[in-house]
Length: 94
Ligand SMILES: [Zn+2]
Image (tube, rainbow, N blue to C red):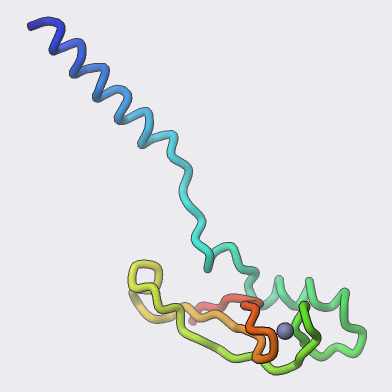
């Protein structure tokens, strides 16, 4: 009987240790730079002051809504992608 109690305590201890030590996962959206950060990154590449894609230099971007219901329950999170090379450049929240 005591063995089961000790085993139970160990299981509970391991369970909480694992939960507590679990790092908060950064989502893909959260790892994107925001608009100000992107401007700062891009400024080093472009002397004319126009905002370009940092990968191909294209100047047209499209705004898309983050489709993940879990990450974007209020539909106020967006990402901006280059229309030329389709790379996502920055995120925004309204
Ligand atoms: Zn591009």
